[in-house]
Length: 167
Image (cartoon, rainbow, N blue to C red):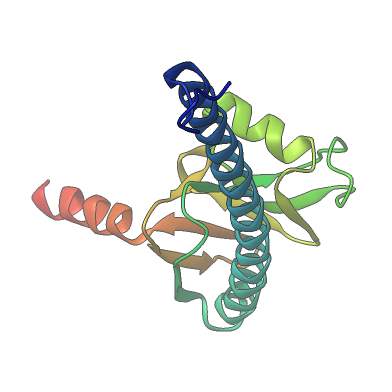
């Protein structure tokens, strides 16, 4: 309602301000949702390229016995290997995966529910510590002993060597 001078009464002005704030909040939440969807898609693409790079480095390790790889992305994902696992659609027998970190038990479930990226492989791969977390980037040592490939964090290998030298 307007008074005789043509200005809005305070009650109507408050309602318009509240509706404007509510509309802005909806717009901001939609933008945040859109941004998070784009980030998730980028993380999956990064996981694909990281997994392909690891498989290339494993081929080098098979020829030379040992090599290194630096995996930079995606952050907060895990490298996991599966043997004789039929729950993953991409794999029939042996599998190497990079899956989102959803807590240790739930990360394995994320891999099995196609949230991660998995590739079937025709050789055994052993991943140290039942899975390697990718935080800000990680240096890996890949070794091949003639029968299986092992993947370990670079610092882990240094730690083992220091313990051997101390004893």
